[in-house]
Amino acid sequence: MRLCEIKKLSNLVSQNLSNSKKMNLIDVIGLFAGTCVTISVIPQILKVWRTKKVKQISLKTFSILTFGILVWIIYGILKNDLPIIITNSVSLCLNLIMVYFIIYYEKE
Image (cartoon, rainbow, N blue to C red; front, side, top):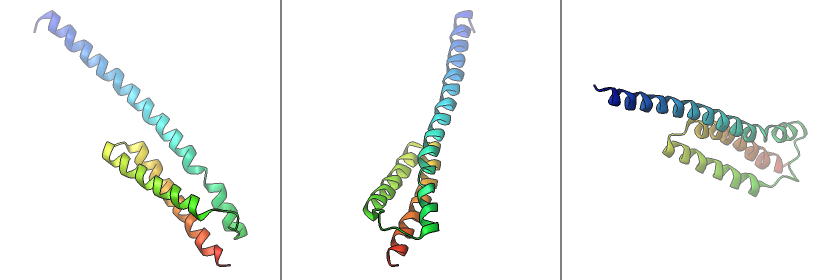
């Protein structure tokens, strides 16, 4: 290999390592954002669980939100984006719990 080719290869490796670090930071930011959105429903779930009151909570809203989260999971799978898949999978479970509570406690 000539010196010029070695420099090009060195620059390419350096650039790839730099991009790899950025991707890790991007993944951390994605996980953090997803976690914030995911845990936002927990206080509502706990309140309904304690009070058993759902009269003021919209089933339509949580149903549409749950469907949207399912679509995000599909999107994450298609893009092979782990932060989107992980956070939205947890969010889907939590929102399904909320939908169940709304349907179950609405009868009371």
